[in-house]
Length: 73
Image (tube, rainbow, N blue to C red; front, side, top):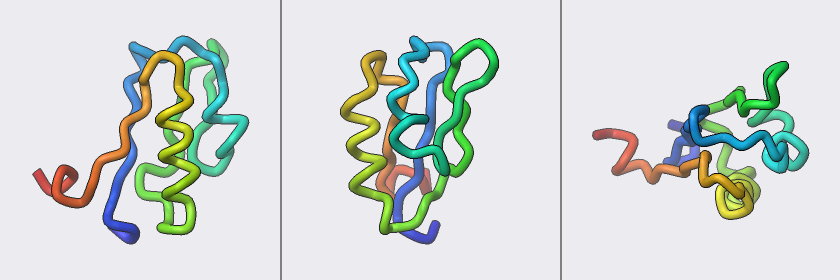
């Protein structure tokens, strides 16, 4: 883990708002049905603030940022 964190998505919770894909197209995308697709589960430390903002902004809470301790479990 480069940045000491990882990202996960719950595709079943995704409502297809697309805020994550618009904000961070190198980390998130959407499939043909508008459901989130995680492109990079371990983005660099330089993106941590942006990924945390995407987690906060997700209306369906489908994005989770895990600290290094959580990702090792």
